[in-house]
Image (cartoon, rainbow, N blue to C red):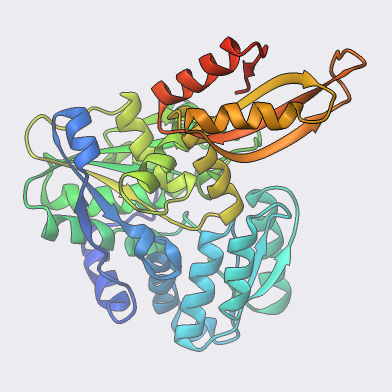
Length: 409
């Protein structure tokens, strides 16, 4: 095991942070998950940090860092972020009356860009990755006298994030396992320090998205390892390299770090929306994905708590996830077929569909890119159905009526 860094974070630091952030940070609720409890046969709860101010846990660390800086941030603060840290720092800076600038990737979610700007930050869209934004923010800090605030690799930020762990100890007396999303490692480190300092028996498991899973190779190598950039649904935790501090803290305090995929994460987002009525971004839903997928086992005795770390997701992406979920659940059916190219042919097909009880959402003629007879046209139909069995009956009825229909997935 490598030697701990010269700078570290203690339970006392987390307790002090709680006093610093208490006037602003919400004590977010824990809510039982009937779906996951039934699925796992264990007692599973959610920590709804997606209901935190600015929609994510990040405000805890940002406020604590400003408190530690004191007069050193009088000229303002600057950061690089995929979005949640940017919004959190903008909010914290506004609360404490200091200027704020943020650097965000060019492809950052629009909701997060607009959120930071609405909170009073000067937003600079820069580069393709958070790493590039961090470099730009460092350069801006050096040139302007602004105080740089790192999104995770900072002891004051980690201590601030750890205040969430104190709430878990208070709200869940039977706490046995905590499942935490992992990007740079600040949240999982802070929670682990807070929880395991008081209850060493509690298991803390981190979850990364497979497309940017930097902790496994970094822990194996004993130093931060850079992984390639990748497009991901979990942009909030798409960190290509852990920090030196957070890597050492994860090694010391966290029991395990596991990995989940993109499809699993999208399914978890849909389940949270459909069953839990909770809007959770991809990075905030990976813990749920890990429980559903079996990468993490819920505690057989005591309570398992999954941290929903953020809810800042673009409405467009959420709609895509919801539509995909409807299709997989059999409540949305896309059929592709051919009809004679003559008056009344499409009307006959639609009348048949009406008799099956399917609801037509959309119909599109497709005349190009398909091998068609000169006297026929292809049509793609989007239908609402009442589940898989109904969708199968609709498809069967269309086929029995003489249409060569295929389901589009």
